[in-house]
Image 1: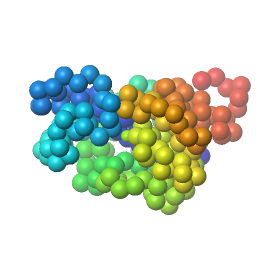
Image 2: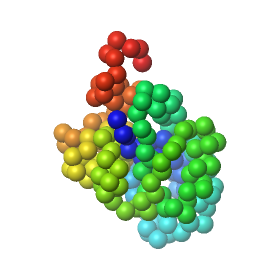
Image 3: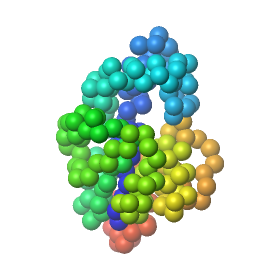
Length: 191
Ligand SMILES: [Mg+2]
């Protein structure tokens, strides 16, 4: 299958690292994000949050560790014949930080689409993605409404009921299991 893979919150454990940095910067003590739009949790404007990210982009894109199991999961998907297309809300100006980070953790990449916060649906349709891994509920809903099934990696900011086209996965182990069930992977093979 050709699989769309979001980066922040799915491959890069970005929010954990960013919340720590933002607490230091804004003098807050947020432990868990309730909103994907972080400025709401931190009680600052979208602009103030955007400026902080613009001013510290190289650092902020360098510090996260990979999400547990993400590198191994992507290695497995590629080994099992799937094609991975990263679709990120990051901008093309942030390509060098993104590539540097993927290389740092030896996470394979071929295609990375930078949407600059534009809707991911057009990219997903244009690239004929057959399934999509995402952590942001807004994207997940839009992509599934376009007919592409979504696996939503569980997070504190995406709780709640899901429509039928979206399947919640607790971790990368469940993501791999779901993809194997939907593809022709031999059922007897071990995970
Ligand atoms: Mg994300």
